Length: 581
Picture (cartoon, one colour):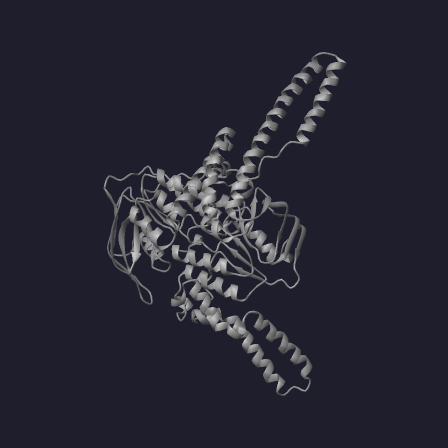
């Protein structure tokens, strides 16, 4: 279906990928992975519209290949007031209208041959997407995704997560040759994440899905494309198998690469000594030895084993405050309520301590983001914030806090940095390089924008952080860095998240929205609820152990401690087998 050979593409300020080759075959469910900003979304755009990009290499796409697309951001601004069913059925209704219009023309047309051909072509296309039974097909998909309750509701009333799933159903039912989805899991609650898993696994067509979500990666795909450091690795098999084989190969190659580096270094030192001797003493034999040693060095460089392309790119996120407060209370909410067309939250009461780390959870569309914004603005009469509290806010709608028309450099110079060198030194800790400084923020990936938000709030030393889906779009290593920063923060945090690991690893307790109000829940009860409602307990615990061991292996490799890396790798095998069963 798709065949790319020696493909390369660069922005003016950044090289994205170089000389990559891969295929995508009919019926494959392919996960497209890599760190934030590595070029995954751009490569997907190139596949959808090759004429728009000045790339080098060959990109072959099957003739008449129809490509569907679901964006990582659910755009609801252009929606018309219609039911969920009618929204999904739009393509079917268009075909029905076309067929009816052709039939009307045929009643009075003298030359029927052209109209008959057009009629048959349209009818074939309609039947190809199951048009004769489209109402039943839509209802089955809604049932599969546990969205039957939304069938007759207006799309304007949906949450972003609910609308994302409805979009996916609509695209799947149009039966494209290839469906590309860019981070479809972002902002989905636990229940909707399982719905997405069901939709992916039931889809009969070809999928290319950009995601960082390990739950989906472990359960939904039979092919992996991994783009990193401008290179691409292709693997036919599951993500669990890929990650295991990648680590095994990485340990082997990195040890060999380290030995090569050491040998080359020793040879360089010998060359330096021979060059000094040849300069100080007029001795033909020393000159010959030098030339011979230089040739050996050239051969060593030529056969040098390249270290694996996957490296730790973990940002150094630091959340700190020099403004601890003496009071035990950061804020109090007493009798909060909010409503739009209908009540979202009523009579909400809670209190957050000065060093509490609290997760705010609930289904999509229950008012979490609205509450967080009201807390930040301090405008609702039920909200009482300690006078010594200074808040900082990370928004899931990144344009709320970032001027996307500005460059990275200008943004941080305006924040008070004296020189571009100071900006670069600071942002390099967050994974931003010199060649990115003049990029417009609008050109960054979702993960890079979130890292910028975190870099900005890290400057302010606020003693309370309001974080709305801060792990969304972040790759695994950036998520782990954020978790570590949250653990080390000595102020209060209220965080909206659907990421089980971030909540379980960092939070003191949970505020859960149910039945239009909020109640406090201990971490023990939260874990028990998640196990009962959504995920298998053994799966989550095994995956967490696996993730911790993989990180330890990566750190051991970074320190060239191959004995430790190999020892840790042996402990992975039983965990991998458990997850693969």
